[in-house]
Amino acid sequence: MTEFVDFAHRLADAARHETLPRFRTALAVDNKEDDAFDPVTDADREAERAIRALIESEQPEHGILGEEFGLHLPGAYHRWVLDPIDGTRSFICGAPTWTTLIALEAQEQPALGIIDQPYIGERWCGTPQGTTFTHAGSVRVARTSGCTRLAEARISTTDPRSLAYFSKAEGAAFDRLAAVCKLARFSMDAYAYALLAVGQLDLVVESGLAHYDYAALAPVVMGAGGVISNWSGERFDASAGGHLLAAATPELHAAARAVLAGA
Image 1: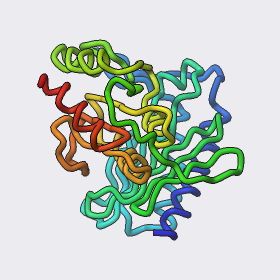
Image 2 (image 1 turned 60 degrees about the vertical axis):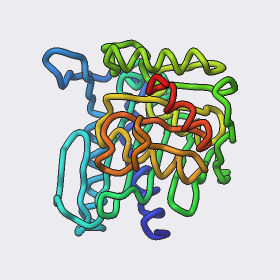
Image 3 (image 1 turned 90 degrees about the vertical axis):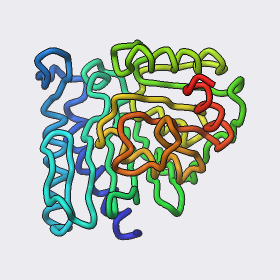
Image 4 (image 1 turned 120 degrees about the vertical axis):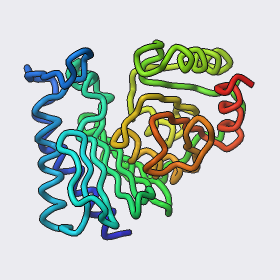
């Protein structure tokens, strides 16, 4: 795992080399959807190309699943799952809450996750041995807040509107949960899970996520002492689907699940 951690940091560095020079510039934005807005830029594409080139050169037996360029070596024991810019909407608006997500799976089970915010210079790396937080040359152990009560919880989701990422029913479920929490903040994408890992948020709830959106999150959250699952509490792995519930503690996770379920 030490070898893979070092390599994952190099992958994140390679992505930074492509994303940072393009951030807050007059960058062309393409739309990947016909009936919705799903933006992509050269920063997304070039960052993924840089990561994939390193993997194919130095770990040629490893598979890759990336948002922009799809699947390479299906069935490989090890697979890297890449979202070169999670939060492209934030990226094109100049908001520094986008991140690069890099995950390593072993037989589709989460083994390693990187959440990297290049502009602020923050990086989280999660493994079964724990999660580290790096900023300004300092590395420390990341731990969740320990919050156990909904009334004290700080909750986040990317877009709370129904018919955005949530269906109407899912949006209503999130509204019920947010109403009993202390405060809510929005539009942070994967950066919210990173803040949960260092005790600045306590709950994150999402729907409509793709595999590359969430693969890196579980090792970071769990390594920091948090709990992550789908809304039903089922085991988190490559088949978890797009419903995520992350919490600082098992007690908070159970309480949030009950509210989401309408109990």
